[in-house]
Image (cartoon, rainbow, N blue to C red):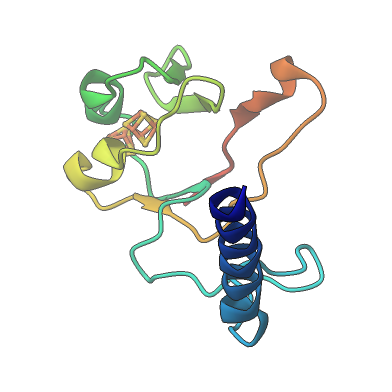
Length: 126
Ligand code: SF4
Ligand code: SF4
């Protein structure tokens, strides 16, 4: 009986100690979207395309087949689509691009309510 009481008190004190220990620490969460996180310069978010020649190398190295490239009759790049429901943000398309046209921005707000909206037509800047 005495042992049980002692163990109960010990458990209660242990619980209170755990709470007290965390009471004065900085929170590890933040009040998103009011507060935005600090991102590493190497963060890989939404793709940005500038000066793309449509060679298709990015499509070939994409491990999740997330890239769709469409060319017109003159073999010029017409449309560049990334399916963010497949993309794993590995960065291969950026690392292997021979013209450094592909960049990955700090934009991580990619949530949509309809899955088909994850297929994004990337603006082709010249
Ligand atoms: S982004 Fe780079 S690798 Fe991909 S098609 Fe354009 S030029 Fe080629
Ligand atoms: S980041 Fe990786 S998975 Fe996403 S489109 Fe580029 S190569 Fe494909």
